[in-house]
Length: 313
Image (tube, rainbow, N blue to C red; front, side, top):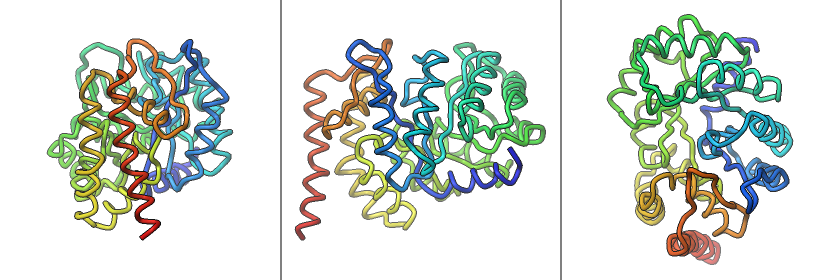
């Protein structure tokens, strides 16, 4: 891909809200292709800047290579040219290289590079890892900084010097001091993305650092709310942002924090709550308990009630 095309993708992704669609499974835990394509078709009808197939919310960690290939291709079909589709790469360096090539062959427009699997890593090793994956594909790459792959400013600076197709950095830590140092060191060479499990909580301080976009998991099931929240952030309407945090986002986080791994499970339960299909998660994740699903359904209903009240008013 040409430098101009990569820059155009970075600008497109930075211009609006991003999201990571769930990967739908049937009751037996098998990939449900028809429902997945339907989900992507629905999400692509909204003004979202980019969708990441088989991402963290899409349970990348539980998918086979063949399932990753299917999700990318079906996402592209469902989006039908309306939204850029990016694919995943991760695990060991060689596994990540294979997945990067798979994403390119499947038609993805870019790649989110997840941290290496399990082991602790030195910054030098992370440089070698990213360079090796970047060299295996012509697609633009966004590096995901979290877990054992929290990159320091000079590490990222070294990477961008030798990897022209590394176009972005997704912050999955929420350390604003570190992110500020990264931006000051690397500058506008990279697109910066807010990537916490519920990035809405830091959307305003992210923006003040120049981070114009973030990934919204709740866009999966309340896309209009997620987009309205994003617009209020970009407009600097702090009263509306704080109201939405207070009335929905923070209660949502309270439910999410009741169980380990619920960051994915609650999104699928949210789809069920709005009358669409979320379905089960795969082990080692667990589904929300019945009482938690009921609490989430009541919370989601408040959005619908507020929307109706606004329409009537």
